[in-house]
Amino acid sequence: MISCRRPFIIALTGCSLALGVAYAASVFAQPEERPDAALDMLVHEPPTMEDLENSDIHPELKKVIRYGHDLFTNTQQLRGENVFNDMNCSSCHLGEGRVPFSAPVWAAAITLPDFRGKNQHVNNLEERIAGCFAYSMNGVPPEYGSDEMLALSAYHQWLATGAPMYPDKPIFGRGFPAPDEPEQTPDYARGEAAYQNNCAICHQQDGTGHYESGEYVFPAPWGDGSNNWGAGIVRVDTMAGFIYQNMPLGQPRSLSDQEAWDIAYYITSQERPQDPRYTGDVAETSERFGPTFHKRSLYGQTREHDGHVLGDHENFGEKGDIKPWNVGMPRFENLSEE
Amino acid sequence: MNKKCLSRLGLLVGISLVAFGALAQQGDAERGQAAAATCTACHQAYGSGMNVPNGESWPRLAGLNADYIAKQLHDFQAGQRQNATMATFANMLDDQQIADVAEYYSQMPLTLGQGGDQADEALLARGQQLAERGDWNAYIVSCQSCHGPGGTGVGSTFPGVASQHAGYISAQLKAWKTETRSNDPQNLMGAIAKRMSDNDIQAVSAWYATQSGSAEQETAQ
Image 1 (cartoon, rainbow over the protein chains, first blue to last red):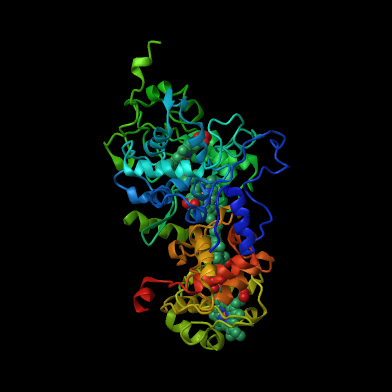
Image 2 (image 1 turned 135 degrees about the horizontal axis):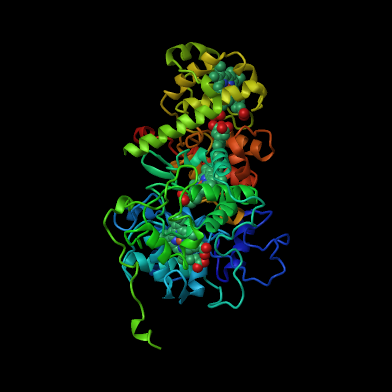
């Protein structure tokens, strides 16, 4: 068929021309109407799985990258071992982890190792991935250096092909940037109404998501099948950013800023599995991890309409008593005196 | 599995409430067969429909979700879905008959999709890519993320598209692209179709026409 060689950007153009596909717009460009258009940002278009097949990478490495891609988009294959909820990595990192404004994961491969506020030490790519397992997947990460971990990090790094290590510019489309502050304070009832109108058709009225013939289709935004209280997306602004930039599926940035914040407030006011950093007391946990994390979530707060204290329970979801080994793992203790 | 069954029920209930309010009627397949006498001219005796290469294809109705079928017939009646051929026939049915024919067709075993055999390997590969992984460079979300794994449908909102006729699939995608069909909830389908090129439409139509739409059909083949 068509042979695509690096650099990928050029190869891609070649492919689309050869297939006779002319796209009006690419999502991998910084549109001129964006407020940050004037900034000089790092815009990177990661390779696709088609590019992988057509590349001259060593066949053994191709196999491992393919396995990493498969784990990323079908993480449920690790259910019961490393994953204890209804998520895949691609449930939050849309478009196979490539797409701007859906926290494209290659960004981690070119910015780590670095200091991370959440756990207050220097993390590498594997530790970052382990974090998403412990919190977002309500699970237990595969061991560092294991086949699964190596395959996943190989996939992340390969997506970064051609992007500079430790870039000196901000990365276009990184994370889940929140929409502008809303005019009105986010509101539970307004959020509930907007959720039922825009989201329940897929995620269900009660947020349990949807399985069809035993296969995952729509993930659970809250409840036992969702991420736990320690996951980045429980921060109201991160949730607002995720929703605004990615939902409803297929219609990014179609909600108003107000709707995105209202719905985010509503979803993050629902219960989910306990934070694995739980000390046995929700107030204590929220205070200890407040400065680095929970100051942006509603964890430990009292829900106004029914007086429920969020996160005040011992429900760790499907994983029960199992503790993720990476949570609270000390690092670089011998350097701490310096 | 209990939870899964429950959530599926949730979807059905949720959607039928949206679609027909409290009016949702219980269909009867036997009465449906009688009411469907006029339909067989196009949709054929076993609900197989027919791929009509240079004309208007008749969709397979066999095995489609009953609530989905009923919604489409109500939409034809109300003019929310526009098609001259079907408007006439939909208007011949009352609400009870709609529920009955919907039940009747939904219980029929799926028949094979037609019109995909001529497609070459490259076209089918593109079709499979769109169906299973999408093309995020153009923000085309994979079809299976809504129509379910294998494109066999999800609840009553997302109809099965696997094993449907290529001519019909193409016609619908083009209709959404040109906004002559816009009866989908929340513009969910329209938003995707508008990002597809003619080649994409041809590719994914051929792909789904060649796929089986159910486990039973898989073993029968």
